[in-house]
Length: 130
Image (cartoon, rainbow, N blue to C red; front, side, top):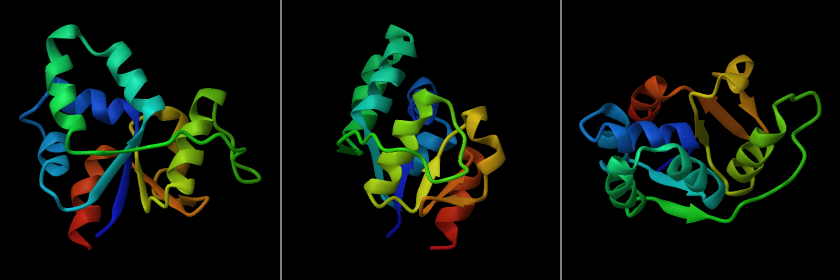
């Protein structure tokens, strides 16, 4: 079973639309979905209060991992706020980092620090190849 790291924007999207694809995949049990406290706090901060109960329900399906702070691999350039996302995904042993963050754009479909970075729309296909 793959370990899939979810960035804050994916958590936000799933909680804001419980009938959408991210929610259904997360609740499917087809992967070990993880997220750090750092991403959860960001999603919670940006999510309209009407969806906070949905976020709590979603988090019950995830494994929370400790935040990690380490420099990105040589040559990898992401904003400071995204460095803990990449570091945590790598140190937690995630195979996939799912994010819609445009700052990761040049890395979509590439493996960085042992983690393949993909867009949310690519997740269903990635899990089918399991």
